[in-house]
Length: 73
Image 1 (cartoon, rainbow, N blue to C red):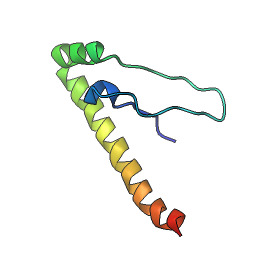
Image 2: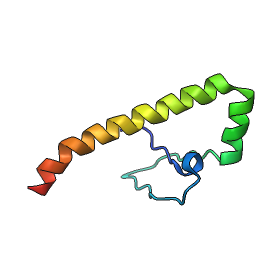
Image 3: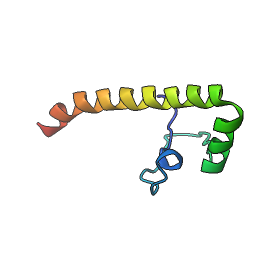
């Protein structure tokens, strides 16, 4: 399973998800201030992180589109 990424720090909106694991795990956080600093100091790395988030969201959207017809019956 790919890492989970919270969009709260990107969208500046309220937190909208919880993380549940079936075993031990590691949770990483990136505060908005730290992301802003990353964008100022290492825009190449911030862009790569943004690309990662977009790919992750696209993959999850694709999976959801496949699962909805199955789950709805």
